[in-house]
Amino acid sequence: MSVLRPKPPEDPISLLLGPLAAAASEPLARLSQLSWEHAAAGLRPEQLLDDYMRDRTSSELFRALATARELREAVDAVVVICDEPLGHGIQGLFETCCHPFHNALSRGERGGRPRLFFDVGPPDPDRTAGLLDLQAAARGNDLLDRWGVVRIVARDPAARSAAPVERPLRAGQLEDALGRPIAACPSLLLTAAAGPCGDVFTPALLITASLAGIDVVRFLGGGVAMLRRFVEASPESNPPLLLAAAMWAVAAAPQPGRLLLDTTLAPATTALARWWASDAEAESGLATPLQHSCLLTVSQPRRGSLPPPSPSPGCGDGEGSPLPSRLSIDLPRLDEHTVGQLLAMRLLALHVLALQAAAT
Image (cartoon, rainbow, N blue to C red):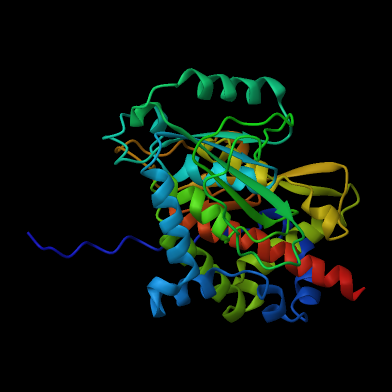
């Protein structure tokens, strides 16, 4: 048997404008005049990945992975406390890239990775109290009874995204969403950029994802792939630019609205849809009350040989064509590389719209 592992697929995601193609043509022409490189400058996947490949042990990504490994080896469950929208992005990466029943598997079946439990906004006192009950109930000294906490605090998005880490935190230094001190346990305090336009390719997300065994190098690779398509592709085949034009067209329609993800055919992406639905259009000056949907489809299932769900008759034109009557995004599969592309596409579209709003 060959000792060489096959290279995982890195197929690109695709965006179909459907009925918005005509309405998006004028916005696309105007957005094409902007500095695309400037729009991409706020995202860091390429820098993080290049530093890691060039000088691994001194890179920011290596330090993030080491931090995750230290906590992973000390506990069997981790509570992740994070404000939205970043918290939804982290939870979405967990739900799309890990085993669907990750937390129900034994530690051995999880490859020694801890279970992850999320406390993500909006505030829910019952959810927060329930997680604290679970943590308090595990009082043994066995590894399987040990819990940890990752608290991610949002800060000014203009600041650099490096995440300062304190470990371990003492009792009373870390509080839950209700302002109550969390019992002393192995803990990390991380920071990340605030707001819907905040970069998700940050140590805070990478550390948390790595806890669960998610391949963050492939996740960064997906972000880099989308950045390169954005910088190099023509406007007509440029997914972030096309998405920005579609968002603009929807906002400028006689009945204006905003684009949300329809995850009917990809239920594992529900948390990613919540990240997408953050009030991003408000930051770019395009906030409107009505909602329009962008259908998210997945070509290959994550596990097994069953085919992905077929679109319902209402999703297309009823004549077998691939969803021509819907704005849609097709993911070749649900994995780190694909999710990295999707998040980068959305962020780049928002940055483009923010540049356009600043220029007018």
